[in-house]
Length: 111
Image (cartoon, rainbow, N blue to C red; front, side, top):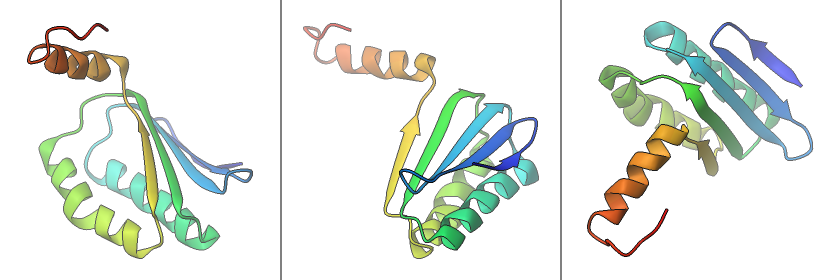
């Protein structure tokens, strides 16, 4: 079920898994980004869910200020609100960069 839909964001409620599923597309920053996460958090609290899935495959870079806000403000509130597990689907370019970083010290790894 779609809970919120905007240009850069869709928030779903997955009834079968009882999970908040949030998908970002393009750039999200400042008030738009924070409002989106807060709406998703409200859904998590209202549904008494413990699960959060963030699909970031189509999301562009997040600025440092919003990253800090997410870690210091939103994440503690999400945990207090009941979130126990969070899955994050990363963009392929980030996954490829992470594999390269792993391959460097452990040259025998293949991707």
